[in-house]
Image (cartoon, rainbow, N blue to C red; front, side):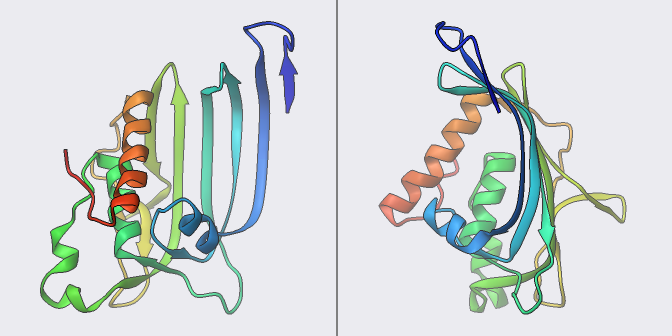
Length: 180
């Protein structure tokens, strides 16, 4: 990381970050995201932060195999991934029928990129199989896939911040995601 023009109102932090062996469970619970267990590794490239907000970056995140650590994702986290990716977090199908008996699902792999450039954010899956783009790929019969069905979608950064606020607000109210 470097600080550019440190004494100017136009100062910026810029650089690249490499991270490894991040335990998702405490991180997802700390940020009221739901519960995801397992470990990830990744990078944040071309990061530029000015005036207290990111101006650009490219985040790449993927599963890191750790022996003996289960990879599971709960319904709340599934809905929040959906909310971030599509703007819609309520997934009634996960709370009805046989699914109502499952509070968490196994996954085989997480793979995603999130890019911010020129005020626009895109969230893409990096797992490409069967002609589909997956953010989360299932493992076994009771696993879950999270598919990016609109891979070319981009939203304003302010809209992504609003989606994050909705996740935090939902946790504070103890309710389901609001699909507004």
